[in-house]
Length: 268
Image: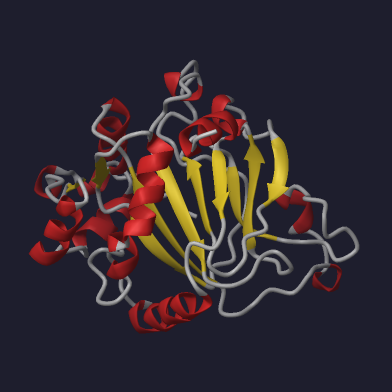
């Protein structure tokens, strides 16, 4: 099966050994240097390299089934965050009968590069396999993704997932609902590696899903704040263009009514 066929079927993929341990250690150093950066990753001084990496771009192209991608500033550094809970990132997660959950070709993808081991440690990614084709966040087999140093995880924005997954020491091969694990005492859980650092980045293709998702982000306070603090260098734009990645940088922020933004929803 191709990567697109696999992700269309289960909603996510774990891709092994994309980066070396040395490269991940370098990214951890970059994260320490860039951890006060508020904008997206492409506008960061050091972490911009993850967006430009051809291996990341190739994974996105193969998973989307398109040689032409769109990047729109939807990326972030997660540094020692503790929030958890099942959710979907897609625009229509609360819209009844949305086509997002019926279309296997839904194109928006999120990549996660966790900069520490989560095969034997807590605080990794938990998701529901196959949940991209169901609007409910309570459907789909719960899996703690056992990512190791150097692995990359990619999933559709319609896939139900939760950060900071806790692994229970007595049942390391069984994934529990995050609503249960957050209530258990820490001595029952496998330890996590600190600082827990992850890099998240979103890509799309030139289609209606991407267009509508960008419009949706224009209603979210966190997205506007990130765009306001992002500035893409011409060098980085051209580097992505050579790999058939279109960079959108004009979001019409001056036309957005800041008083009408949704401040309740926070990107996890």
